[in-house]
Image (cartoon, rainbow, N blue to C red; front, side, top):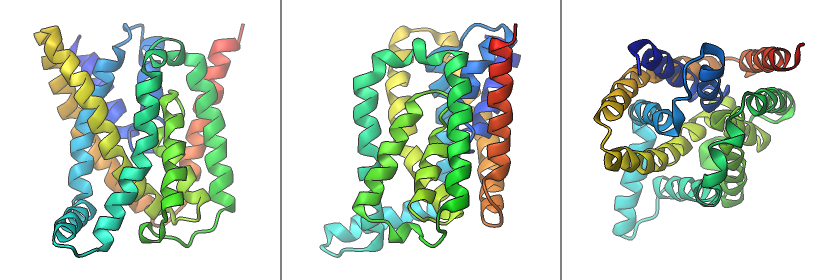
Length: 266
């Protein structure tokens, strides 16, 4: 794989992973629009791992709070950190089960540009409708078990490229009345186990394949994606503390319509 191909993959993944615009959808589109061969899910997950490092650094405070909560739990002392850790586990379970059951169906038919186009457009409009109509009053500490289940079930839809894992979990959070920045932060935290699990599985595949070039390419792409993701996360959180999801929705609608025009225009 050429350096330019790696750079494009890493920049696209790093910038789009945590924004509500679908990183996997953009990665699927690269071979369709550039003429490059499909990089496959192994390379997709490699750049996801780079973004995992970025979110671990950005979210170190809530992660430390949860880790401290686990320590207190060992000593028999409940805490908000332990409660948030439990909610995160509950929200992760649905996508783990769905990913295992549906793994063999994810690679081929769902990686087409047509699926990406309709999912990008449809779920973008859904985000706009929910963001305009939902209340904006709840923080992460206000979530209950049923809320974590709802957001976790929503994350399952992100197995379809173009849906956007960040977008659909933020949509679910807003539907439950969460403030925009709070919904985004919980989405970031949910990304950690999801990306870690996928990266662990595909990393094992890379290792046993013995393809050293692919492994080296994956490491370089992960590093570049890390830098881009850290910048993108910081800018997104600053924006959502002051404004709405509308710019992301506009981008998704334009991208979806553009793709549909490209696919269906004679």
